[in-house]
Image (cartoon, rainbow, N blue to C red; front, side, top):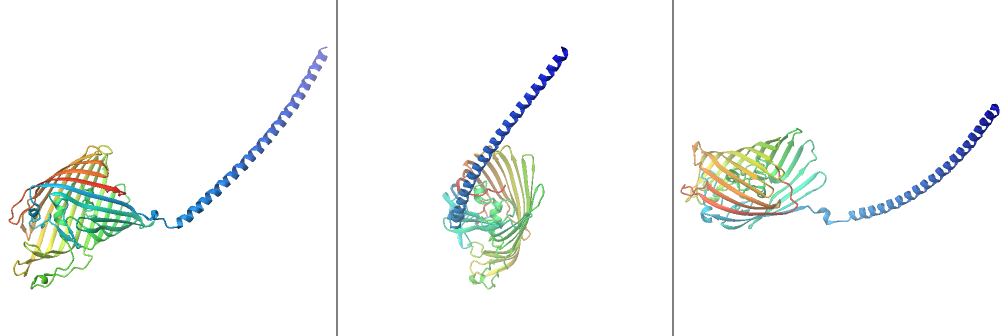
Length: 468
């Protein structure tokens, strides 16, 4: 009986195993059929997507072809440069009449720096020259990349009496290795203050030492500039410039026609141009949130200074001039908008040559040896508590005035304070007070001049960022 039961159990087990195997095979066959169906669906979807992509690509190609065809036609907007316009107006209150002011001078240093003068055939008056309202200038800027190698920049200066090309120059970066070439007419990078335009100044008027040594235009010349920025962790730039040498305050290369004054002396011939050479080194580094920028500069060139038509002490100078400069700027940032800046610059000039003193009556010119050594400095402190307000003070002095080894008048000091409000980065509203103790009248008497300047400066259009 046990044997029968055992045989029956084994037989039933084998039968069940055979039945399970058949079911398994059947399930596998169904799964294979489902996989084939899914694969067919995937192929169908891929084909559909491929057709849609091809259609879109054809549309894109058609649009690209249309755009390329249009680009071949002239479109003015593709050639328009970046354009900016800056206007500056002021109101001046002063304790001296305009007619008196234009006759005042820094004896032995500069004649009538507040008077109208000629420059490149145009007539100019210094900023804020008149009591009451002044339309100081309108400055039109145009700039654009010429191609992948060159960029062209220009500044046109409009005053009430004239229009001039203040700057027109190209720059190129194709030299590589930190080397840049500039050519045309531009503000020299001598020192720190010289290459800044008026609207970038922290005060409404020029620093005294710059106005006295270089005039209201500073070193603004035709020529070429080559600069190299070293591949170092801290900023180091070395530059050299070859310039025409036309600065009328201490350089100049034009002939002076003394014979036009019925003088028995021969004319002073023009010097060979270019006649002015400049070199400088600038460096900068950071200590936390404080940036320190310093530089030394040197300029040398021929001197042809023509004051032969002056009403008082008419004269002319021929010789050679040298100018030394050292600058230091320290700027500490409290946050993105709040900062404190201390800026100082020292200038020393030497002029050696011949002075021709012209007699008021006979107009005869008497020659004598001339050697000038003069030096001055300005220092200013600017504080900005936020992005809207600035306040600052500046001290100007010319403390050395040696002429032919004789110490001349050197009590040339000026004190300034200002408060500025900016509604935006495009608007400056400023009030400034000056106490000018630097100017003397024809009798050698110092005239203390108190003035208040209300200045409004506005900018529209695309204007490049200013340097640090």
